[in-house]
Amino acid sequence: MNTERVVKLFRDITTQTLMEALAVILVAILLVWLSQKLLPWLAERVHSSRRLFVLALIPTIRILVLVAALLWIVPLFIEPTVQNTLAILGAAGLAIGFALKDYVSSLLAGAVAAYELPYRPGDWIEVEGIYGEVRHVGMRVVEVVTPSDTVVFIPHQKLWTGLIHNANNGGVSLMCVVSFYLAPDHDAHEVRRVLQDVTLSSPYLKLSRPVLVLLEEQPWGTHYRIKAYPMDPRQQFQFMSDLTARGKDSLRKMPVSFARIPPEQAMDLGAESDP
Image (cartoon, rainbow, N blue to C red; front, side, top):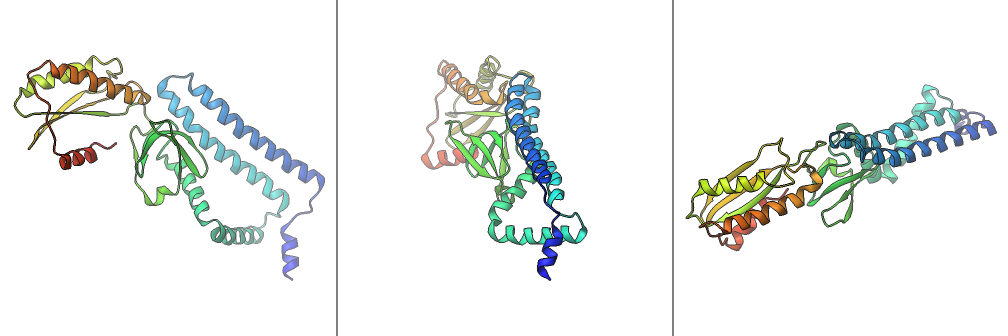
């Protein structure tokens, strides 16, 4: 009886059916391959504001192609009745649930990521202490390249349990923070003016975004923070290095002294300034 039920699930498989299924698979592979090659090429040739949007289309197109291929192929082999569909979904769910729980969890999280877009290609994210640029969003993992040019593969499963920090969230603006620590006896208004001039004269500055110079008094001295935006998120480290180098040079020409921070307080400041 069970054998008869299994047989009723499937259609009569012919050579034409196999050829049609093979053709669908080849077309799907070709479309996915073309999207992964052509869209990055196109993204490098459009305006920066549209570059991230074009890159974000890659995982979406891949999912749509795979879903369309499955919807085409499955009815070729299986009689599309309600009973057959429920039986197949139940059996597949049990098998996948026991054998590939973590893998399927990452796949489901990948589908959620494609819908909610917590990160896109071109975003700068931090996940469990790993900070870098999203280069590729796959079905199971997101590929991140760190500032030290290390490629890290992070499972989408982290969506369920971890915090994801997105520095630019699909946009072309990413705030950078540069800190200076001075002894308390100085003219704070003059220091703010000098640091603001240093920022406004940077070749990496995005002039359409605000420039802020904030200060906070501490027991050991005064903590200055420059908050500004580079023209492109990929320039953030050149921008911060430029502000740090020219800022220190300008401050050395003033009657100010750099603060000496106790080690334990330096660790607290480092935790506060993490991206």
